[in-house]
Length: 353
Image 1: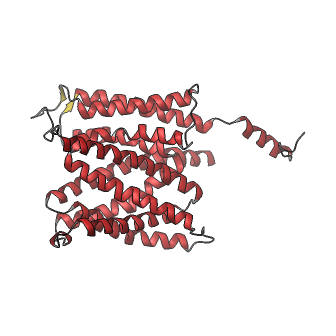
Image 2: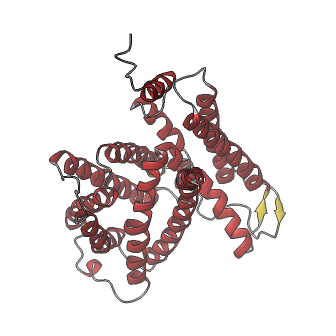
Image 3: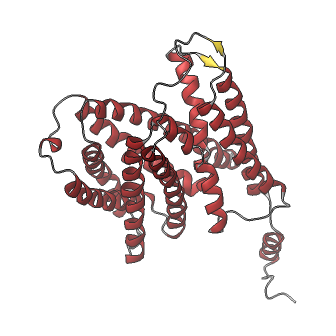
């Protein structure tokens, strides 16, 4: 019974949670896009929904702080939350919106699939992943990461003939213009997902040192909101832009506050703490498969050959990474065996001669 509960908590729950996060991110992007098209400033949208998110996070923060023996909030933890807020809000969101303004959503979707690769490399640099070329688990994760990137790129860049349904167009309507601004936008988006990968790494390391999830998320959101407020005041000089009329803009602020700071950040933080940054990053290309499936089932959009090939490639790569991670979790190091045997015999292996 205990073994079943452990498998449920460490394997089934994180997987289901990340699928939910992907779906919520799609919902947030869709409603935010509609609000921005209606004339709402992207600076104001991010600012307002982050401050509303702080209010929604307050009850959980107070509940965690009033439990028995809460961990002390140190200057070191606050400084890490400050950096996390700076990376997650100012750099990722600021560069992301500006990069999409200069280029296109198509380019952004393609570059986002590099996030598993960025995360894998950074995880090895910061020793969260071991560099063991001859080990089968390392090979599985490496090949799986590359396959996921290739599969997502196929789905983004190659359409191919229609397999199911009918399509009125064969090319996306937002193809980018190859200009200096388009190149600059691509560089910005590339930096966004590099910073996002670094955010996952730092968040994971912070949780290892300070395992109070709600406290970390709360202070990260607070610092990020304050930093973004300063940027907004300096950049957005139009007084009318700060006024939000009832309608899609207000709905987008409320929905984004509920789905992003309250739900997505907490769920992602839980998965980072439970499974690590590479696990979380692998759901970025998998999100494209989920989106294509939802579009086919609920919107009756056409299914193309590129989507099928890309989906199969992503799933194979995803399975390879998951297999490698699950095998690593079951491998017992020789030192662990010695420690366990020493504990059973009532002696310490370090003192035994």
